[in-house]
Image (cartoon, rainbow, N blue to C red; front, side, top):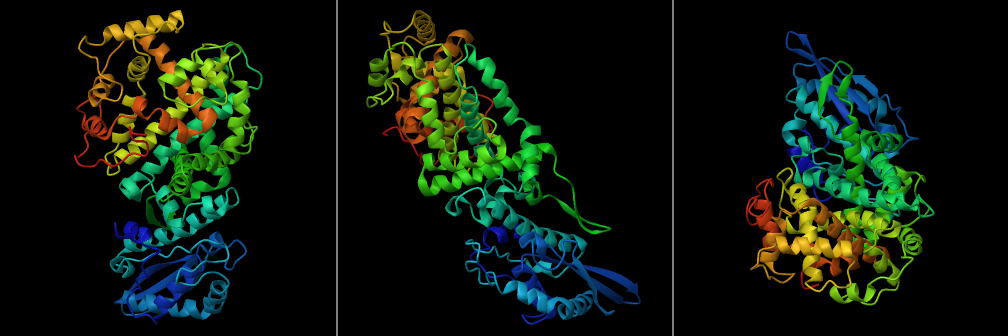
Length: 539
């Protein structure tokens, strides 16, 4: 627990030195190794008759600086026998300083010093505050965890260096953020100390990028679009594909896995493909959330698209370098070939007149353009729901609370009732199929249900509704296509503001949803965890 807290406070607090004083050999060796990007591991052998001999191992330097000394295999130095483990470790550190001190000092000079100043790479060096109890080496477990924490820091620095080759420096999260993104829930305990939040958001963002790339990959419009671009989408999101992309970049090495003391030193188990996929989603989510806080959702999608296209898609489905360019390519492809009720949709949703009216004409059609907009809009809705829940439930650490709430907001029954409230009783301009579906949904509503679109009670009823599958699917597809049309034309920020009253429940309803009082099968969440949402009803 202390090491996790130490990693979060690394950039604000100075390192806690091992016992023996600031000038002791162990302290000096530890400071030099940490500043050089590596770590020190001690092992103590009991010789009998109260005699101990320690061996110190220096490793991880090459991970932080590929051309630096010493080799990645590490260096070992044995000390003189002593009458206690502490004295034996000090002896080994003294021998190691004599052999490696000058080289380590030279390695520390070009980069940032221990004060955490900006280094040549432009990023602040991550400093770890070491827990005093662990630094006293009371047993092999403490030593192994200490070494693994330092190794994790070195590996995260290498991950950040790789991200700097793919993204602008301002778009790359800090080492402390990436430490959380590469720490599984089983170790970090959920919340900000693990990758649970970033992986959850990254899954939604990656899904949207893959949907847009799948439509772009088709080129000319085929007749049965859904059966054509779905294989691309599911292949890119598959565990084997994404895990392979993570391994090709070496990101799986940065995972903080449970370590133990093995015969050859520090040992840790290999990451499963599912865990490798999770770290890929977490890194994408960390980049997205970092840009979201600084620049907004559209710039965050720009950075996420650039990362996904270069790592996950690798040029297969992407014909655009940036997110804005991808949407610009999509717009003319998805314009309807026949006129549609554009003015009605614009007035019902209180939107400005669109620059591409044909996109709204496509939304209500079941031709290729409408199916493509529905496919993209489904991904946009998932991102909007994820961000809404992330801000409405900021204190949620219970596993599955946000996921279950998002599933309730993505149900066809909920979306169908919401768009039915938008349309109202006048549906003369609808196609016959949509009109029949609208009538069936409205008949299922209670006679006394004459609530307005933004009423809290309307959201409660719509989230708990159970309707026939066919009618709800038709209407839900139209709503998703309309969301996709606004997002393709104006971006996610405008789409979130335009559909806030339609698809984003108010704060009190989200709290009840998380408590399980609106829809079933939602993990309970302690009361009082709500926060403000990015897109309020007044937007």
